[in-house]
Image 1 (cartoon, rainbow, N blue to C red):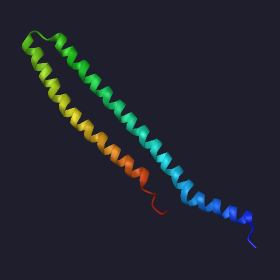
Image 2 (image 1 turned 180 degrees about the horizontal axis):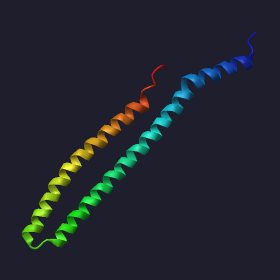
Image 3 (image 1 turned 60 degrees about the horizontal axis):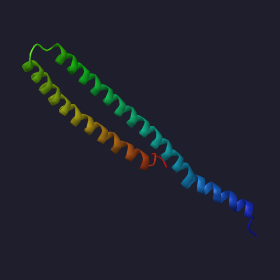
Image 4 (image 1 turned 135 degrees about the vertical axis):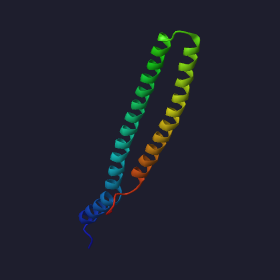
Length: 108
């Protein structure tokens, strides 16, 4: 005769091993990845703000309109380059984040 308690314990162990434990690990990876992604985005925003204020200081010290136009042109060119690099970096982090969440750890 089948012992219902033994059957239930084995079913729970199998569920924990095959479903619950991998789900917990994926959740932890998700939280870690989301946190690092958010922090990187904040770092980028801080850097962009610093660069904008530096350009505004230069504009405030400019002697004439031609200097202002040069400062603005340089800032826009540099910001465009920064934006491309930052978008690439965030894209790479998102791809890594996705891979980490859905890829089971080695040895499982």
